[in-house]
Image (cartoon, rainbow, N blue to C red; front, side, top):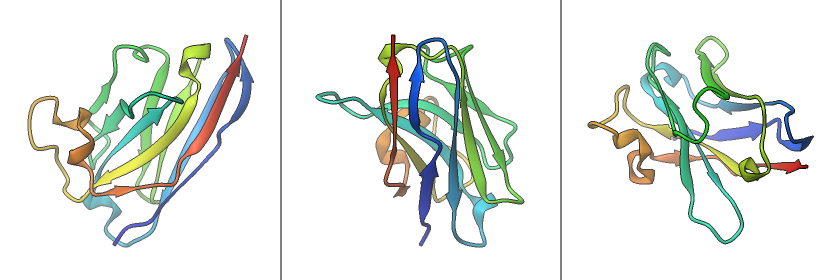
Length: 129
């Protein structure tokens, strides 16, 4: 069992930055590929970014590419989402997710909610213009 706890959300002006963190419990953190998703009110949860167990492979939604950076520190059992140049449309609850394998199952599979076994409780990001 893995427990995920997100932090770092808050209120930020458009154009500003935030860094989200997701701390994971368990001794086998390096066995998990990880991802970030978000859900705005009235919308479905959507893929934001993903990272392989080693951190060598990263993947992004087109809407955040070039503005967001996903990273991980396996020594701290933590992944991060650095969000720069935030836009009002980035406002959402952001969720951290863990896949209970090192690799994703196939091409673009990291975008699917079903790829992940564990989810955090979410952290809210509000962007005002």
